[in-house]
Figure 1 (spheres, one colour):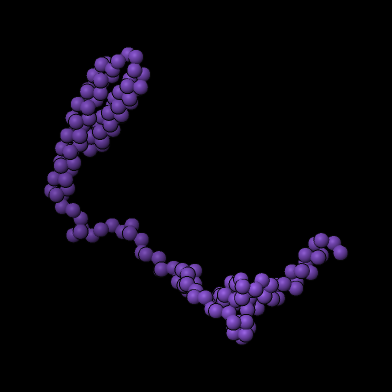
Figure 2: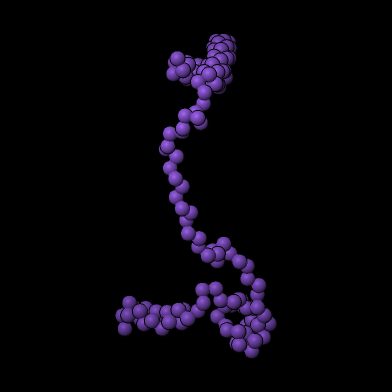
Length: 159
């Protein structure tokens, strides 16, 4: 007999038995028939055989996979709708918020410019023999320069 044919014969004998088993069979701890004094855990015995062989049932835990599948919630309505005029922010309040935002960004810009100047001074004062200190100082200066550029771009968008 060819190997493929043997495998198909073996599967045809085993699959009907597997189809009879429940998805979650009860687990039992049974005394081993081959090795006295030892026990095995199995789900391949029925209730009657388990009682006959003096098997003890094992507690099974519920799994999240055992829960029934819930249908997906209904799709939420889209929120692309324009708010009615009475729910819009008043113009005066929006101007106040814009002014506050501009003041905050200006303060951040001044702070970053000061930090950039300090970082440039540290780059100049870094010892020539300490390559690591020079690299860290240059990286800090570049980071502050990038921050200054980003804040200036943000201010340009506000005006």
